[in-house]
Image (cartoon, rainbow, N blue to C red):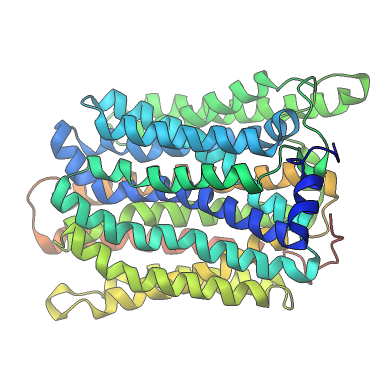
Length: 493
């Protein structure tokens, strides 16, 4: 493949040592589109709920359905890259984002909106593990922190700027405009991919269309188990808990069966059987196992709060979407700058210290939310939001590097997809759990999220939900501290 001008070797020969940075920036644009599509919809949930005249429990699936499809599709990334190569996989994902954005924006039926969100989620899930693979395989260990910081800074600019623009668009044009925001970024990423994304698979080898097949049984098991988990959590809101308990028990049983099946495929692989969807060997590394646990809890808190904050500001504090977007912009910029700085620090300091410090700040920001009093101004609200974003800035560039440094290079694609999977599984559960806790506390207070109620009782319900998030985030501190004690040497791939 060295004579193929579009292979990794061919692009390196054309662009030299700078190619790895050009490739990273190209992937960053695609990731920005994926991240924007996952978070920007939250600001449009109230408007969409009123447009389709459906309750929160149904409209929440605009977020949860996206996250389910994104979570499951992450596990297919290593197989897709090995079979079809970087460029074909990446471009297919960008076309899905474009198609989902256009279809969702033009849809007149909620079922079509959900289908568009599922398509976007599938694309976002496949794309997200790829940058970590590039950083750990194409960059020297002394550059990995810098690359991770620059990449993270660019990616968080999408959700930082997105709500500001999205809030204005919702006020002026309605919820449909949110879908179209993703389209320009995805189209630009498609154009750049023709120049800088190689056709080869990870490691520079040729993509092999005749490689072993996908573990469809494993994919079906994990998909059904994830859906039953989220449906079980949704059913907990009803008066009859029997269905919820059955679904949650089936989800736990399905996950146990999935793990057993993956172990069986891993043991039988030397006989020529197809490989497992999830290579469980990655959990033999303590730093990765602890990092995966942090990723799950962190995902629960991050995506739960991403759902909760806009709803809190609109329904609890009575702020307009455009005001919320403008007010959140400084904290988003702070997050981007923090990631850039911490990315460089992660080359010199223990990831466990940086991750633990970030988790502590994130938990503290949730715990301090009850101090916000609308009658005395919103300065404390923005202070706690910025404290949480500062914490995220310490976690994001350190978690992947701390979890996967020293990992055998053949396991890096699997490790990247697995840690993304557990993070998004926590995130998918986090959105549902936040909605469940919020509806429960609102019900106790005699307040409806979409209806009238006493403002003080409504605020108390939101504050109690934030305290639950603080407790969940604090649980991750133990695992975060037990990650790798120091950055281990990683050979350049």
